[in-house]
Length: 65
Image (tube, rainbow, N blue to C red; front, side, top):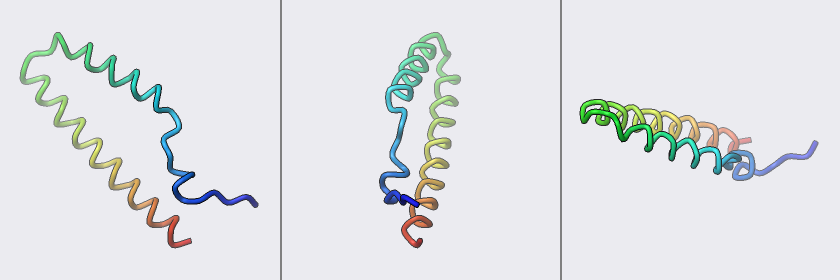
């Protein structure tokens, strides 16, 4: 069984798609009101914090194996 290192298994595989989605999100936000923009960026922050928490948890679990 070929095992990959922990850094290889958790690398982002779709950076272009993420860049495209972020660009589209920014373009769509041009028509938002100020309150909508504030809420949207707060949600993005919560999502990023959640993803980073689970990434760190998975990385630590892989390093222990």
